[in-house]
Image (cartoon, rainbow, N blue to C red; front, side):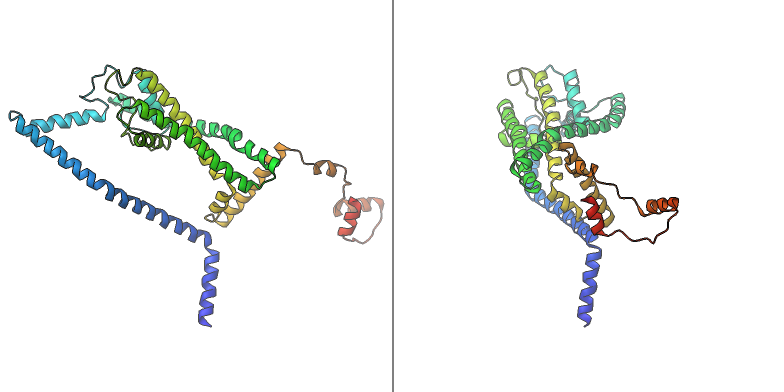
Length: 353
């Protein structure tokens, strides 16, 4: 008896707080995902970091033993200065005549700032440049987000909504199933055009990169992670990169177009009915009702834009049934009085016919 009462109370509690419990499970799952990722990266990369430290230490000791006139303190000062300059895109190893702040390189920098990619290989050196970067990004990032939103919405109409509506009418397939198939096909095509093919091109141009490193650069860039460990167009001589300005400009255009189409794929997946139902599991009741009403309104708007409703022409010719207040007002004007009788469904149906 007590056990059944406790079970019933738990069931009612779970039902009443289902969305909150689902959200709590989502938070716990996300934290576990972060911890698992940190553990795996630590297990993989820590050994390589230790090996690199030992290698650098051995190279430093070798250099000092072969050059006894150089003190360890002076060598460390030189290395620290070189590393500090390298953070600003200036290296002692570069023999090229191009600069990091010519117009095309600056255009590449502004695109990485406004799209929040931020490779970090080129940064403002002066205080004036840093102040202007704050002001420029403060207004430029919202404008970029607005531009991307508008561009993605227009592309969505061409590559998602119209094809799904067309095949839905032609094949009479459910939009849920058709949307999932379309999302998979679209993601595969975008991955081929903006990941596989550009990675192969970069692998052919960048002599120091293998295919995995080229694919890694494309993925890190298009997802706006922008770690900055691989930067295209950093060749040491003219033979490897005969047209550095054109090459850097092409990379800028590729990043902007690729970002738009990656957002199109993400928006297409978010609009799937399966994803909408999954999100509603974590909503509160009022938000869930608003989301359902918004979805219904959007679907009705799309249907009305695509084809006119034939029932509208039928309802235009139906007789108008006066309300009870209108009937009472007309009876008072005629000086008649009669008891109110409710209109039955059968009477309304006969009038409609």
